[in-house]
Length: 351
Image (cartoon, rainbow, N blue to C red; front, side, top):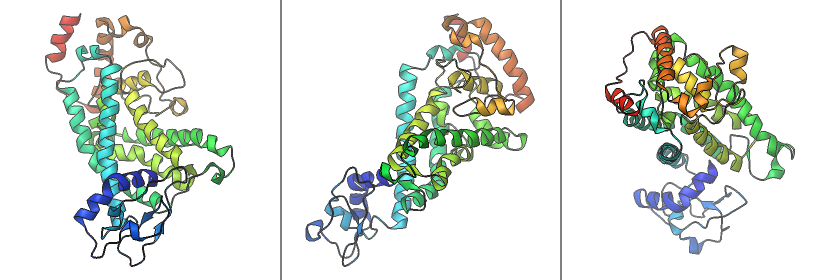
């Protein structure tokens, strides 16, 4: 996250902190000899260069970088900055990814499904907007630890344990996180914690892309912990970390988009995850079905999902609803969702 933080410092936060928390004695960058890519402390008599976040590109700090009582390497500034990035930038990424999927991929005929909730998209967005700032609060200590050098992050490929590791880190990250998220997710379905923590995400029987981040805050954070723990255990390239962060957000939207492209027995795609939302106790995995197979919780998606006509047929929906209601009663008891009459009216128009 130090690469991301340096970008935000250069183009946004330096000026904000200089304005909100001005230093008593400011030092102009014109009066200090420094490396072009360095970040500086601002309140010392002799500014001390902080190593750049990466050797592959540089950003010239403006005068604002030296004009705040909180220099760039101040731990409180880093904590606040990373919180704002995680929350607000995370919210922007969520809206962009989910909206693109909603507009160009998501099958809008899902609106007519009997288990589609009244005002569902609005409720999904609201739940995500409530969850993200709280999830960010618990996530920031990991990012601060990374920025301050406690993680095993490396910059250049030659700094890897061995050259091939630059490629192996990607499958290693996916395998590590897939394994732990499976067990965390499965644990969240334990009756003692499901109703409080995980049921808010299962409110969406037929999710839209906006459901991707619509969690209880502690649920969302718990399932993200493996991502953040990984670089404290295994070496991870800084740029690879940013790419994987982007991939995770895109994948999370992808498995909620309702477009069943991957009819694979190995990939835990949108079809597998739809089985999870419909029938609750199956397909806990994040990327693969490996641990579901090992744990006896794998359920192969219905073949009807991969055919446009049968996927949206009244017969298939009735079959889904009948089984879903049986399982839902066992897992949750009485169904407190408000399906309203909207889906039924739309269904009549379509069918």
